[in-house]
Length: 243
Image (cartoon, rainbow, N blue to C red; front, side, top):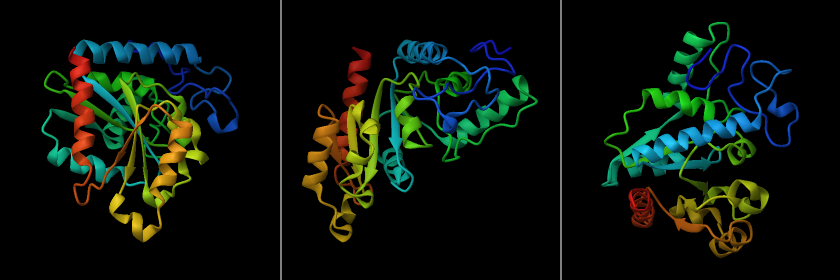
């Protein structure tokens, strides 16, 4: 049994989605899924850990092809604050370590798989491998299906959704739940708006419908445009976390 979250060989790594269904089958044992309540307890435990460390944690949701890496790379290069990015590659190592020690009969799932998504369970295990005493901001680079990213609470401080101008102005209407609970929405690769025919005013209108309270940040990591506003958003989160 795992002393971090209480999971055993029969215990889930991820909870079932709210709506259930075959696309959210239990990765360990289908007839004994982890309850959503258990997952929520893990998320609250993670959140308490981050609060104790006084770290501002951003659950960064993105679509395949939206080039979230461009934002992360530019942030790592230029952001003056103390930043840590939790990548799928890092979590794959954590998952492999946990599976080897606690679930030797199960192969580690690949968190870079588009059909998988982060959950509070794997984040709970990652906390054993994170040195956060000299960190102000953690970016959780999310992945997997849009539906899974929208459902799972990781224990983050806040959620930020990112999509590219190449995704089109209608993206928020196609995936409203993805954007609905976010504090901010990043419209990425703005330098390509003209070439792709992206309608920025229409995108803002759609975002106002599905995420009316979210701050909209329009950025171009390639040129640096809009990055100051993104950095200011991170600074404000740090300030609130330390208050």
